[in-house]
Amino acid sequence: MNDKPQLLRRVLQAISWIALVGTVGPSLMYLADLISLGQSQLYLLIATIAWFVATPFWMGRDPQPKSTA
Image (cartoon, rainbow, N blue to C red; front, side, top):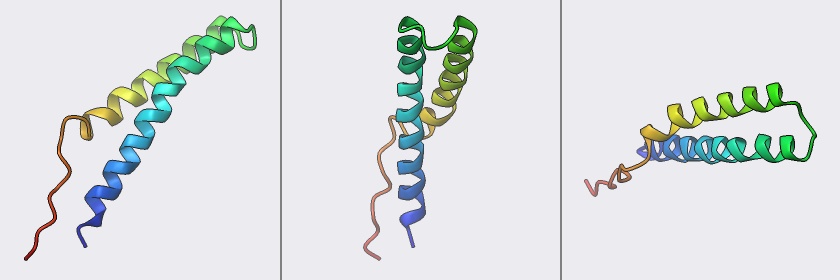
């Protein structure tokens, strides 16, 4: 029954990694002339906000120890 915090932690970690990739992807796509500067800036803003929202909830915190009771 104590799996919910671990599941939430994994989901937040996945969101953080996807957002981190989302901060690199638009720059490379703009460099390759696949998207416009405005689109790149919008995607970078969204990915940055997602990263800053998701990451503080799991980074620097130890997973909850499993109780033996």
